[in-house]
Length: 76
Image (cartoon, rainbow, N blue to C red):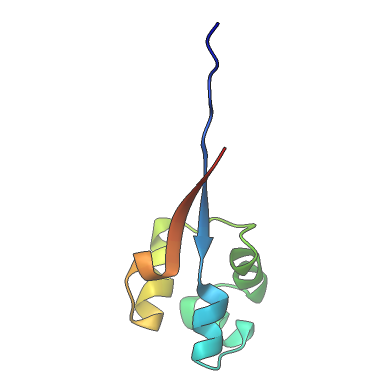
């Protein structure tokens, strides 16, 4: 008997931490990267996976690499 193990990948992020370090509101960040505040909220809660373009915008805004903002985690 074979057991198939599926590993789910989840994209987590440090947006809330970076935003706090820069003393920004969700609205201020949203305006800076061209989205609505609800998008920032959803990203911070890991309920929305940003496009590559949006991920790059977030990283560029904070002057860090994409990997410094977003991390790929594995869960079974």
